[in-house]
Image 1 (cartoon, rainbow, N blue to C red):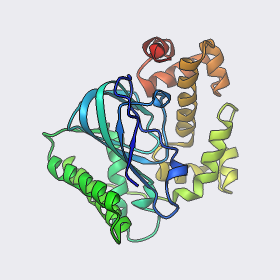
Image 2 (cartoon, rainbow, N blue to C red):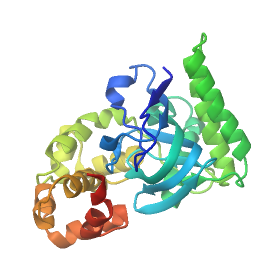
Image 3 (cartoon, rainbow, N blue to C red):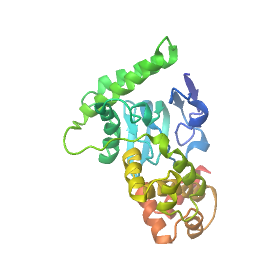
Length: 302
């Protein structure tokens, strides 16, 4: 499926806004498309359980990824890990090629252990804050060529295109590993777990983020001890259960800050934070701004 979305070039923000569950096929968890400009409803901070690759074909702007602000221009590539809070803003005539895919496409807990290197590469990019690749980086030309291979295969859909896309995505992660000189052979390396095991936990967090949720409560959903659950969650998702839950809360809080005139203390309470200082500190950690400054900076979009 080759899609063009968001055809208005005059708007202020750009972000692909597919409902991932609606578009992806059960055995092909990949969404590939091109954004032109922006849909106003897609400006909100958000995170998802898909890895995202963005290639800027035209225009300029900024990306906010887990509190770190990047400027971008034509030719830049962004790698956004699953569960990283992000949005693009301040754009001028932006056109992006976007690839979203499930981490399980790279490693689902089966197969040879060396195959998990591809997923560890994405995790390491997130951990080191190296989300942006520019034309001067090593292997840049090969990265762009591989992205084009993926779009070509997905567009024409010749026999075996799904396998070809998966092969190109694995190749992409190998190039990224080489680009940043990641060494997966040094130090201890834990086995990645199958994230499907945690799907009920993800859904529970999404539906109950405004409540006080205890770690044991989450562990009981998948019949694990709290210690084992914490380990499996961190290895599978790349963050602790509480960090993941707080990101869901911050995404919702950012929406309320822009869409309502509610007091910040009320927004904090309604999003599950037990104190205003905790909310403010957590919000700044993931957005780089205090809640009041975030509201002032982006209020003109409403």
